[in-house]
Length: 445
Image (cartoon, rainbow, N blue to C red):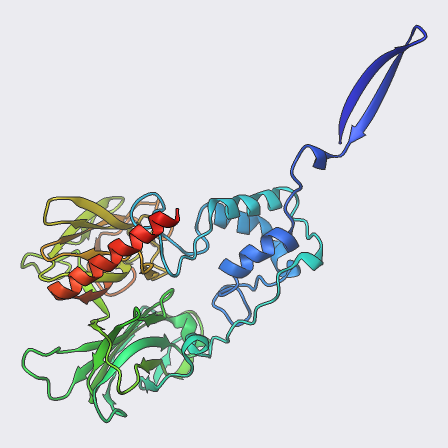
């Protein structure tokens, strides 16, 4: 409590009076779980932290949250959770799937914990949300059930051991003619597959490949943190009617056996009579290692207790639009920066992941109004930083030399870009629409 002291003189006698006022009159009331914290956790955390999610504990009510209050403050204040490893000080900052907490949200959680994590009035709680089961298609609410499902052949998951790879080749059947894909979702089995499938690819090798046509069509790519892809409006991927699916599945044992594990990919197509304006190739690999004639990964050599920096450049032979950015490093990877060097010499950082964590393969999906639109001749420059010291919190052994390899304890260095190549007319149209959008935004301000 605060107090006000008044002194007065009555008939020659000094009178001391003290009046108390509540703290709320001079200081803001402390946050409560029900009113202030629950909405943040529901929006940013509960997708994973629910009984059906991949989070280690549910965070859906006060009884579940209170024991972890101090831990939640620690992880959020350090921006370890939610997993969003993008540098907030440089590059594009508008994304469709931004999972990060704002400075104000982090401050609210911190103030709530410092005040003793009070529950507050349950009447202030937000309306509950029903989260889909891990066994369900995450895009179903938005797109309905998949038009087609492809499946890997069964794999017996071992309980303990090194990284495992499963690379079956299965027929692609079910289409009577070429179709245009608008979305795909990679769905490991539930619950074990969600825990042991670290990342994977489902690539279609078409039958009767025409000369000059695509040798392969990447239907879906997956990583913990990236399970689906919806192409921008008016954009689709051309899918041949037949071929074979090359699966490349990376399993990592977690102490539980799983006989006959199967991975599924759901495909959503445009209507048969509808062809999108733009044709995308989906996610494409841009290497940051083994360029200029070198074997892949030959230049990755990280000394014990040391660092390495690699840089790779790629010249765009046609205009392009980038929908998403997903760095891929392993346990020693700490930073990957993507820059554009334009034909006029201007240089711009597009995005920088400065807190990379191999446990998460987050795809940063640009907002429509901010996704890069790049002219022919633009140089995309990628810079990777590796940290093989004890300061790296997920480094398994800083005493080891580290070289290229598929295992998590080895290293890789490339970026997956969701990219659509354009012709000059499409590029000019896209730039005109971008300028019009920016002018409208400025007028609105």
